[in-house]
Amino acid sequence: MDLSHQPQASLRIGQKRLFLFGGVGLLIVAVVLFTYFGTEIRANEPKASKAAPLVPVTVVPAAVRSVPFRLQAIGNVEALSTVSVKARVDGQILEVNFKEGEEIKKGSVLFKIDPRPYEAALRQAEATNARDVAARDQAQAQERRYKDLLEKNFVSKDAYAQFRTNADTAAAVADASKAAVDSARLNLEYCTIRTPIDGYSGKIQIQLGNLVKASDPNPLVVLNQVHPIYVSFAVPEQTLPAIRSYMSAGPLTVDASPPNSTKTGASGRLIFVDNAVDSTTGTIKLRGQFANKENALWPGQFVNVSIKLYDQRDAVVIPSQAIQNGPDGEYVFVVKPDMTVEARKIKSDRTEGDSVIIASGLKSGEQVVTRGQLKLTSGARVKPES
Image 1: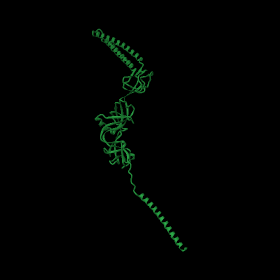
Image 2 (image 1 turned 120 degrees about the horizontal axis):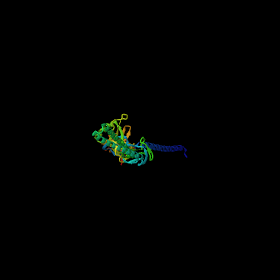
Image 3 (image 1 turned 90 degrees about the horizontal axis):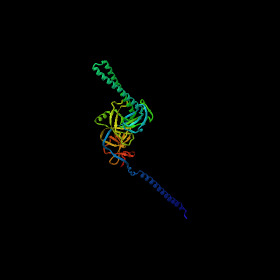
Image 4 (image 1 turned 135 degrees about the vertical axis):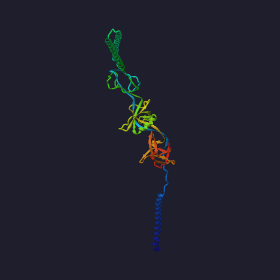
């Protein structure tokens, strides 16, 4: 066996193994590089853009219509008449013929005071008057008789003058006693206390069986007349020329409703403009009168008042909930024909109920978003919903 060729054979085998391992290593490196750069290339490739979702919103078209121009104020309801019922004679209360808070018609009996002392006083006055009338008639008869004697010169003028004086004195005494009868009869009538107005009674201040005095400053009860009723309020003095101008053309309508009320307010007319401006507040006092048939207004109540001056025609109107406030002021989201929205700056003039009159920035028929604004930005696509 030739051992001289063994080193060369081992060398060839080692070279083959080295070549094999090197190829495998290059292959692994190539795979790693391909994987790395392939990932980078895919990462840098532009991704397919997804369409933004449509935002559901509620839209309303800007409308053009006639809108009343009104002045707003806070008013106070006042009774047409307030009567503090008091006793005009002294005595004991025998009857109370009504209930507290009850509606009472004019002429109804409220209280009755014990009439017996005044009945006796009336009879006494009538008796005194009868005596005085008899004395007057006797004196007048004597005066006529002595007048005939004077004409025949049977008595002196001085004697006749005395009888004439007696007759005149007796007539005056009879007239005085007649006045006393009238006074006693009037006091007897005062024992029955009647209501002078139609109205509602307040709390009864004195109960059955109590004594009352004509000099007592406290009323027995207070009555308020509420049909019709007044509402007094004040507006800035700058509005006075317009109020007087439109008032001269015809009656101005005044509406009044309780705060936070969902019911339709009462409607009346302006009847009074104060003759001077309050210099301390810069306001002018006005008063409206209301029929108040349904008792919608009550004395002492505070109400929201509005005066209609005229109708503003061709006004652009949108719901108040469509208006948003931003750093640059008021704006609305307007839906364009391609169903995208635009944040448009506007200028509002005034409010009328739940609507806003637009001064500039919006045209009739343009669609404005009234619900869903929190999810919107300029250019967002929307899906109008009813």
